Image (tube, rainbow, N blue to C red; front, side, top):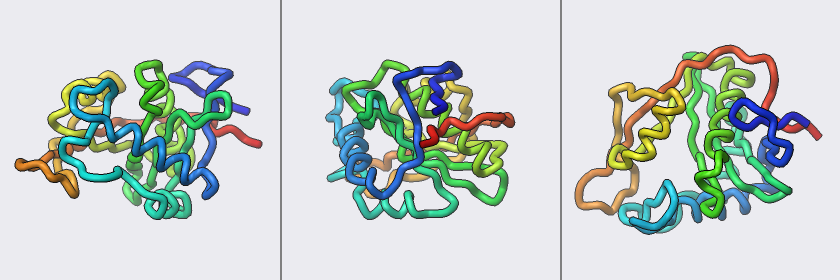
Length: 189
């Protein structure tokens, strides 16, 4: 079983490709990670402008079933602790979304490890040379975190869909060049 954590082996963290049996667990963790109220601990609170849940079982099931998409789940001691969704595009680019870390386990390196695993999948599964993410413009600490990971603003932005805020909530596109790799981040059974 291969386990990657930010460039080093972590014998307690394993990444696997999600299956339909993982969907409910993914939905629960993603919604908990993004439902933090403003000012609450955690990185990704959207409660002030996003009504309801961030995702649902139908959306995640579609991602899991999509041939040009890989949903990764990170598990520590059998418990789901992180996930991301990597979608290949025709232009040697991959998009990484549905990125979440269990809110009770944030700030411990799991996000960095999950991003590294997603980047590896982008290269190996989709032959991507570039990976793209979207980050809330107003969330400076999160944008700075992506900068530390080597992502840079592209100058493109879009309105966050479904926002209830009086002013638009903007997503900024950030990207990173990817280098070829020779091993997989996925655990094999």
